[in-house]
Structure formats: structure tokens, C-alpha cells
Image (cartoon, rainbow, N blue to C red; front, top):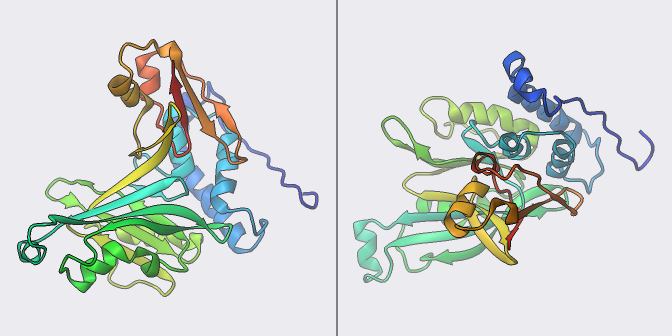
Length: 295
């Protein structure tokens, strides 16, 4: 590698080879192992200090001919894993209903407490959370534990720049709560992830120094993506498909009238090509930074 120049040799299935490869190899497992090795290189300071790992990951994924349904997994580990790696362009909205005794202390003014955080780039190469709004922090008489978990995430997760959100979802018997895992180096995340997803899914009783696990019991956790739609910045639930937006907001428009541009790791935008069919656009997950327009 020449000084100041990064060169990668990337081998991946061709556009036609994805279906065949899926039956022969566990491509998700191989990608996860590859990412783990990249993380080890970052921890060994093998990359420029001002080049964030999530940028390196994105640069590599963008050079691969990925099927539309696979993009979110290769960028954020989203899709069948039950968790999402947090990167800039995402927002977290946390809301917890007040208990009966807490309602009395607000004199009926509040029924829930809420905090919103933006995922931001921290010190050039990692990620962190910045609170953008809070409701009920002072008024609600809530316990110290609940108050910390909802309102004080930046302090709880300080100096732990690798963040992974385990999505809240319905289980066979109970709703699985949202969980945030945080580690001081990204290479520690796979081991903490294994401990969290162990049945029943929860934070481990013993957390090594430099790691954190926040368990949102009784709290709704919503992950949002910042998308520009017809020139207006909007927040949509992470995982929203292009097909859903087209169906709900632009009925009657021909599919050929839609334009979707995706922000690259370099900051430039590339046109997302898709067949003008309902099946095709349902496979496209809108990602943070996307630009969607229709005539």
C-alpha cells in the first residue's frame, strides 16, 4: 500500500451469483468474520486516525454488487440478526409510560417521559449519542434507575464508542425489550452480543470494564432514519421500505417517476437503480441520508 493511499482487493459474488452463492456459503457469517478482522486492524491503528470504521465498512460494501435486500445487513448488520449497529444519520426515540403513582406527581400534565438522541460522529472515528430533546425529566417523579436509562445515555455510554441497538420485538410469550450494548473497542462487541442474546435475552449480570449494557424495560425504543423526501428532511422508522413510502404517500404516481439517491462514504450521491415494479421497490430499505423524489 502506497503512503497515504488505501487499496482494497474485494471478492464478492456477481449480480447473477448471489442466488447461487447463498445455497453454498453462509455469506452473512463470512461477512461478520471479515468485519471482525477489520475491527482488529483498527484497534491496532492500521487505518488513518481520521477514518472511522463505519466509513471503511461502507466503502467496502459500496464497491460490492449487493442485492437491494442485503444492503442494510452489510452496512449496519440489520436483517435477521435482531440488532442494528448505530451510525450517524440515525436517531433514537425512547418513551416510557408513567406509573400510577408517578402520574399523580405531574397533576395530569404528563402521561409518559420521552428522550430523543441523535447518533453523531465522535472524535473523527467513533460514534456517540447527543440528546436533542427531553420531555418530563424534571416534572416526572421517576426512580433513579429509570431516569438514568432514559435521560442519561451519553454519560452511561461515555468513552464506549461502539454502539449496537437490540431491537424491541414481540416474542413467543413476552415482548423483548430494547437493549443498547456499548464497548470501548469494536472488537469486544461480538462477545457482548453473544452474552446478550443468550436465552432469555437480557444484559449479562457481569459486564467487563469498558463495556456497558442498558436495558429498556417497559420503554418503547424507536430507531429512526433521516431521509430527505422531495426536499424536506424527515425521520422514518429504520427499516422502512421504498415500497411502503410510495404506497402511502404517492399513490397514483407512476413508478418511473421516482428517483432515489444514496449518500456514499465519500459524501457524494449515487442513483439507486431499480426495476419499476412493486416487488422490486419493496426490497429496497431506505437508509440514513437517502434522497427520495418524485414528480
